[in-house]
Length: 249
Image (cartoon, rainbow, N blue to C red; front, top):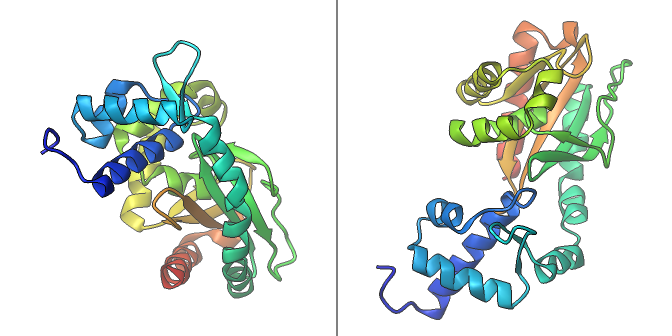
């Protein structure tokens, strides 16, 4: 099918799919072969489309010339729409509702490449407040409850690749690759992520990830002292996240 003449709409969709792939892996970039494999397009089609994106400054070659990243026009387009502000304001009412229902601290994070960025932190009525991450701070995927929920949406192969890129950081957090994969598998089975003393001793969290667009994934999480998020209540808070976030979607 790739070798047949394509309509303008098909070409646009395929070019946009490449842009989304590049954006998701922008920190390290993607090779032509990786773009071809991940997009499912013929190599000739991928080559033609990426050359067009290069000419229009929506893609660029990194220093070695072998990997592609977002170009200046793609970045400027993102800046002009202030997506983080839009996402934050859109989800603020849900964050406030979750903090009211749970009485715990609620975090909203958004995926940025291999990391998550904290967009919101809402404190509930429970007197012990959690400050494991602040608004504007970043953390590697898989370390916090929200980041673990986001990481679990990826394939095991992608998780292993990510782990190899940041092995030192994961090991400092006490995570081996088998442990990280096990946590992701458990997250998929339960439908929500769960951590205990991963970031701060005595602090636990549960998180749930969902998409707000074809390109953007976010996660909400609860943070509390470990005795408060143990056993049955942990499962209850996980179900609350799933129900409320699914209803918002």
